[in-house]
Image (cartoon, rainbow, N blue to C red; front, side, top):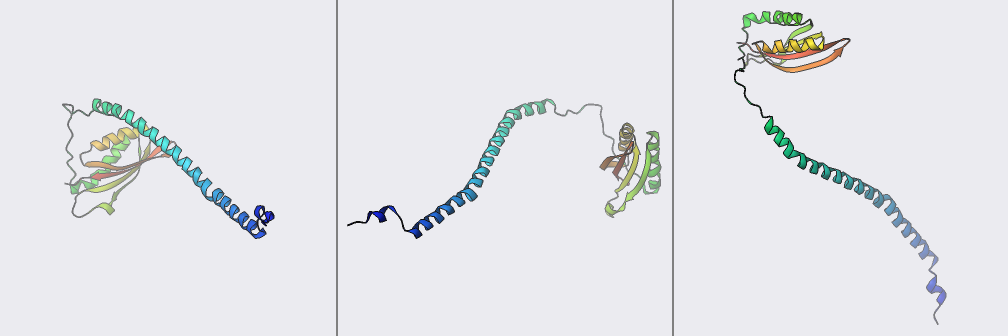
Length: 179
């Protein structure tokens, strides 16, 4: 004869093991799978946004190319670039008064003028000058245009403009050519 009570009911230890296993499975789902699922959903939405951006770029790229073709730089006859000549060593002392006169004509105040010896090498004749001045922004623009026209100024390698009270503080680093 078969005992029907043992078929429907498990042993007390087996029930405890089953509860522990089911709790572990539920913990794995809550701690591992659900957060990863949220990350996957976020990544999916990010992928969708990127796909939309790519589609927009594919649409706008031909338009950009057409505009670029229309605005191509054309050389205009009559415009010539002056060849930068440089300054002789014996005239190096005249550089600071030249800058002072340009700044004075544009109503700007010279704060500092110094040669950057750290970047000067024996093989090249070029050197850098650090120049700081203050003034109104419109005057600064005019002075920068005049400085760039000087035949011994090769390039403005750094320019920093910051606010100083009512005026602007400008720090320039200029490459000067020596003959």
